[in-house]
Amino acid sequence: MKKFSRIASALIFTIQAFLSTPVAVWANELPSVKESTEQVQKSVDTTETKESSSESSSDSSTEEPSESSTTSSSESSKESSSSVTKSSESTTPSGQDNSKKEESKEESSKQEEPKQEEPKQEEPKQENSTAPSIQETQEVPDQINQEATVELSRTVPASLVTQDGSIHFEKDESVETFIRKIGESARKIGKEKDLYASVMIAQAILESASGQSQLAQAPNYNLFGIKGSHNGKSVSMATQEDFGNGTLYATQSGFRVYENYEDCFTDYATLLKEGLTGDSNYYSGVWKSNTDTYQEATKFLTGRYATDTQYDQKLNGLIETYDLTYYDKELQGPEISSAGYKVPIRNYTISSQYGNRGSEFHRGLDMAARQGEPIHAVKSGTVIKAEYHNSWGNVVAIQHEDGSTALYAHQQQYAVKVGDKVSQSQLIGYVGSTGNSTGSHLHFELCRDNSLDQGMLIDPQTVLFDN
Ligand SMILES: [Zn+2]
Image (tube, rainbow, N blue to C red; front, side):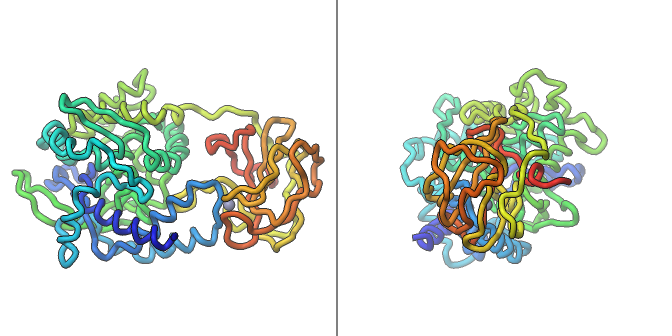
């Protein structure tokens, strides 16, 4: 079953990548170079299907809160070993499966994710209505290099451009999954750099085809199609560029490679803060301190970052539909000090840390230990969950007096029940590997409240250990 979905998703990804819309590419480090006004067409690298399949299947499985560190790290290393020679942004796929791709062209755009089989009714209509309204000619500054023919439905599933040119979005699960992956990084960098996380996330959705572009995925994490190299790392991709007179030619371009999405947001934010060579205020109109609303920022970007005259409408629509202003806010919640928490198991090694782990967000701290190793409550509190969960396996959650909640997943067996009052260090269960887990370990999460929402989680290491 899993294998099948991998194969299916590989095929879908391949097809989709071939057709999907060009990415906006910045080349602000090369302001005088002609290529910067070209378009980058996403398309296929015929050799890439395996990697993208393992990537997308791993993505879809990691929506769930728990996972094992071993699988994902082996997956990402597989990715990186094969990645450098990728040329996913190629012009015309050479070779055999060309015709197959052509055939599947029509259906491909809506299948952003293997799950979404249900047809979107706008599909045929949109071919006609979007193209004229969104096509532009390039009349932007050199350094901005925006594609002309954004076909929105291929970039954002469940989107629709009507005949009169207005844009509508409906919530789509694959987009929501992508937002969850990048949201907290955007929140953090937005706060640090005086930028709207909501706007950056919406841009990332548009520029990376909701995370589906090869460039946006592991091991590149380039969400914005930024050219050049980053910390000496670059990936070469075949692109179509424009001589400046509308004549396209095929060439290779180097794109920045990032460690993870946060690294990418940091770099992008730096560009927005530092502007262009010779004009450091070039993007000052998007800074939070220079605007009252995110709408001012998206307006400012239109015609400046992107030639697309509807760029702000698209960003605003995405921000509203997906409630992205949630990421503009600072997280609230009781402060948790390092005092008062105890490490839950005695014999362990940390096998995965909290936070960004490749393309996914790891919600907790993984502590590898032998099966049956006793688990102790980190703090006194009340058991609010003691059950079997598909992903977490045997899981216990304990709410502490300060309102924070600890979650202990993948237990072999638990030793408490809902409603129990437990004291600090009380035995609550045993380490195992139940649920979605590989290898015996405790997946430990700590949340500011009892919601266990990702946005309220904190890094357990910051409170469990004295620094
Ligand atoms: Zn884990």
